[in-house]
Image 1 (cartoon, rainbow, N blue to C red):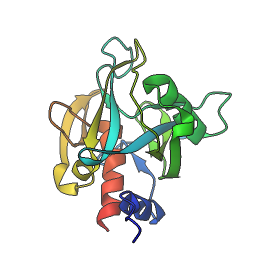
Image 2 (image 1 turned 180 degrees about the horizontal axis):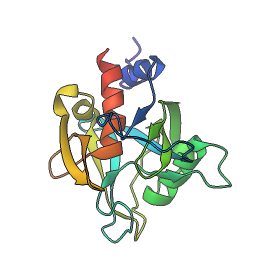
Image 3 (image 1 turned 60 degrees about the vertical axis):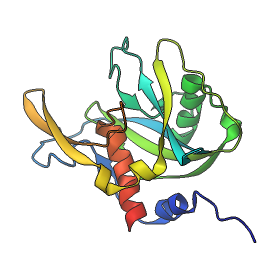
Length: 200
C-alpha cells in the first residue's frame, strides 16, 4: 500500500482558490499612491520532512543589513535581469542565501502575490526539498537558518495580531512566534494565507 504524501495537505491548499495578500490587509484605511510601481520578487517556502514531521525552513537576516536587519524571512529577493520569473528568482536566492541547490527543489506551486510596504510584489513559491541538505548561511546576509514545524504555522490559532507605530501611523500585522523566533510581517502573512487555505 503506497505511503500517503506528507505534503498532500499543502498541495490541496495550493490548488484551492485564494487571493493576493498585502501588508495593508489589516490596515484598510491606508491610502496607497496611484500609479505606484512595485518591484517583482520571489521567496521560496522550503518544505522538508524532518524529525518533527514536515518542517518549513526560514532564515534570520543579518543584524548588519540596512533593510530588515535581524528579521525572520524566507530565502528570496527581487527578480533580477537574468531571472525568467519570480520562481527562478526564489530558487536562485535560496541557493545563494542558504546553499540550497536548485536541482534539489521540486516546485509544488505558488500562491497569490503579496504586496509589501517596501514596494515589492512578492510571489511565494512552495518547494519540496528532495535531497539531504545542510544549510550554509550566506555570510553577511544570513545570521541563522532554522526550521519550524509546518503544523505550527498551519494552525490559525497560533497567529495573533499586533501593532506598532510606523511612519507616524499605527500599523497592524500578523505574528506567529515560535520559541525564540518572532515571525511577523510579510513572512507571517504568507504562512497565514497558507494556514487559511489548509483549514478550509
